[in-house]
Length: 233
Image 1 (cartoon, one colour):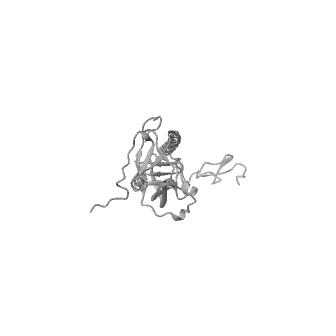
Image 2 (cartoon, rainbow, N blue to C red):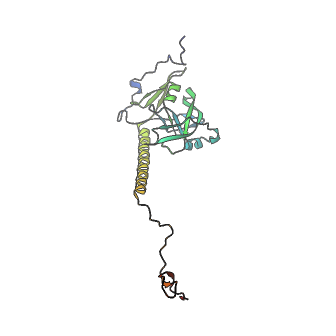
């Protein structure tokens, strides 16, 4: 027998009523929403359908007053968050995420990968989050819709807010890329630098020395280097 998910028979559509007064650069700007996570409304959460895991930053956990001892072991790392580098998770945590208002809301518990580096968003919800909420994005209108017994929930963003978040994200990405490039150049220079010469057991005599023969008659030709201030005797 087929097993249907809750509210899977709820149709979700977009029409002229969802259209903003003016569409700026279709599909260019990110979909940034403001759900409530735990008991705090976060204004910069990125809905990223191209990301598989849900991601949250240690800084955000501190903002939510969550004890880091609550973290569970993670399964591994992932790519795409830091340009050119593999990101390692410091752990996983399950957090309640709520969309909508008091009259009509939807709450689900999502598993987040926790990362220790700084980000420009409070958190990122990826495909796993989309699937849990059965959410449908519209990147043209910058809206997100999801089913609920009391009707479809519509979550809206603005082009101004999306633009500000996108600029900060680009600036951060360029800063990280430049840092990686600088590190690579320094490592290359260090590899090309010649090794310092070091002769084991040899040294250069200090200034103000003189040589005296070991044999007073000088027959064997052996000499000793001593300070110029010392008496040869």
